[in-house]
Length: 377
Image (cartoon, rainbow, N blue to C red; front, side):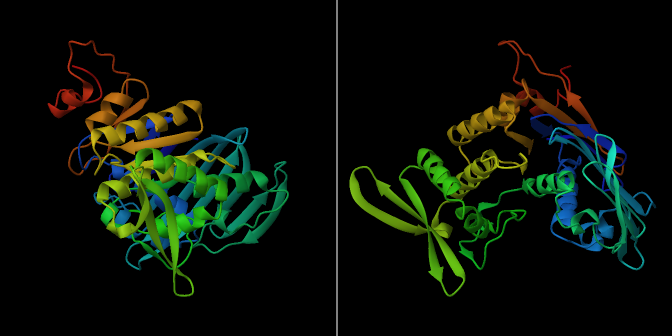
């Protein structure tokens, strides 16, 4: 579980830190820095786990505009595998040459080093924290991401697996493509590659069957998905629907489904995958998950997600202006209020649990009226 996050010199995030729990609701005005937190997490994941070069993962455009500082710092505190990990990354930008390099990269477990990369030198440590080899590294790449798994570095591999399992998405159903050229293990930002991700999930038959059963409960008439061959490697996703009053089933292209249906499919797929726990638990970051859905559709999903978070099976970070999410989560889980003035850093504070009597307005209405900024006035 991601317990803490520190970001400096990334867009409006300057000397920024937050603590996190199981279910976390990020609130505040538009432009206050909420989405930037998700972006920074995604870029860190892609840099370490997908082999992105520093100049691509942390482009110069992500530097804080009102500063003239070339270094960006990110630090993750993660609880898991029987201890506490701290990952520390400093990326140095050369704006005039459009270059970036790793100035410092470190991974600690319970205060003991597992990896220390400093200006081109990569010092490795074994699981017993004894010093391993010192090897040269490419300054433009993550040293942590380049290390092959071995019997004596399982602690390091666990953290890397956890980082790869972070799901970060702002789901846009019209962008979800029905056709897939190949399997993909990581979701794209707006789930454009949902079908390719589903092909990867489909290899786990137990998970695939569980997802089918859950979708049957929330999509009236849904029976199953069908991956239809389209050329040698391409596949097209189709959804088969039927009726309890007829034995006939009808197949629809995934792109023929409504935006709301595709949104529900995406949300329940993410939830099912995140709960199918084999290895490190998932951290799910969703930006406006209630879009395209009716109240009676989002509420059951929200309750199920919250139950998983309370049980410790899944961690969720959500950005939302939706009253259903605000009023359901704000009273019992971790709420974080974001605020900033123009050309000033983002500031965030934990919202104390809101306990309002039946005669008072709900938190969502207080926010709508501008009467709530992290505490009731």
